[in-house]
Amino acid sequence: MSTTVLITGASAGLGAAFARGFAAKGCDLVLVARDEDRLIRAADALGRAFGVRAEVLAADLLDPAGLDTVARRLADPARPVDVLVNNAGFGLPAPFPYNAVEDEERMLDLLVKVPLRLTHAVVPGLRERRRGAVLNVSSVAGLLPTGTYGAAKAWVTAFSESLRVDLAPYGVRVLAVVPGFTRTEFQERAGMDVSALRASVWLQPEAVVAQALKDLARRRPVSITGWRYKAYATAVRHLPRTLVAARMARKRRPPQGR
Image 1 (cartoon, one colour):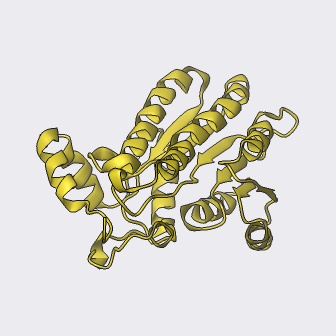
Image 2 (cartoon, rainbow, N blue to C red):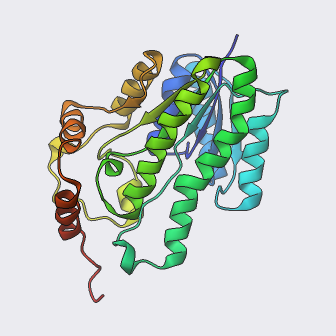
């Protein structure tokens, strides 16, 4: 029985790496992103490299019509999706008080509302077939008070852990993927200055995906790549939240002139 995987934000970064990772396992793909031309090129390359079918579904998930289109595809019993990877997202360059509230709302919708809606669409089919998985891409930013992006990612992790319990009786796996700084387009698109970060903190997207697929097979609730980030995740459980919040706030600076 073939497995079909739908991936949001599939045209670049972790989404593209997830597409390659699942294709290497022989899975058929549904690639979702806004840039149709880029998706078509990716689908063609994956088909040639791995001999899998790669369907292109161009959609803006922040547009109600686009979100409805993807939700309907996930719920289509004639073309079942076995694995959903909620990966689409973006960040903002400034702390909450200095961003336009409209930008904050858009980010919150993409990081929280969209995965909630798409997961709700795919779950009935997974439960009925008693197989499949949901992977939600969170972030180590969600482990500590790191602004509204971190708050949204904390929701993603908590949502995943809760959903995992709800779906376990049906044989459906749920995994929160919790990467650290990863070499993708994310930072550039968000306008973040990461020049001061040491090379040792960076992860490659392929490494994050490889760890996630291992952890999914092992039925683990959370996937963290690299000993540094695993140690970080362990340490923050024991740090006083008020102290951490104060330290993180000092690191967040408003843009020049604000």
